[in-house]
Image 1: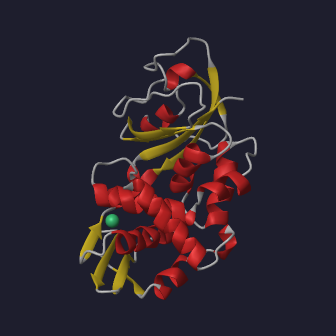
Image 2: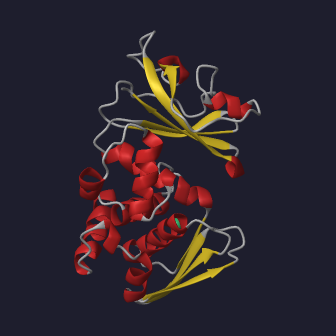
Length: 253
Ligand SMILES: [Zn+2]
């Protein structure tokens, strides 16, 4: 199923001759596909779509401020339209934020949106590692007009430099995504943020900076089968206060 979502996204890129992140205009694509876009109070949903025949109306929450988040949400709704053609979908923040949940339609639409807004070849071609994860990924998110978190996931999936991306909330790991060639591969969802990670400071009520820090692998990877003591990584954290969470990047030098 997810292979089809990717193929459909690429077909849309070809159809509109989009060859560079700067050519991407998701609103124009949606309009050209007979989808009207409105921004309104969606009453608890981040996005929704009503479909009738070959046309539809996408509504995104008017409380979303970040342009990248609006774009990803529109891309996700276009995904429902292209992939399902069912009558309506109501999408929550967690439907769109979390790539690995079991709700099949939501996951497929996310795969579609990721492939449409951040095609794999473009990530490899245009996103150059710049010594620090945050600088690299913020700049990439800006170039691709998407969010830092969706770009981080995408980069861990197909970027050239191996990283681990971890999102914790209320002091526990909510999800993580680790590049295939990163030294360790296992972080358990639900594991507690521990004292070896700087992210713990946030959960203790302290301010944390955005600069990179040296950390022991024990911070995140103690449950990995290949775990070895004494291994150091770099860690960089971005606080997401609204979610009581921290987005953490970990990489080897
Ligand atoms: Zn959805």
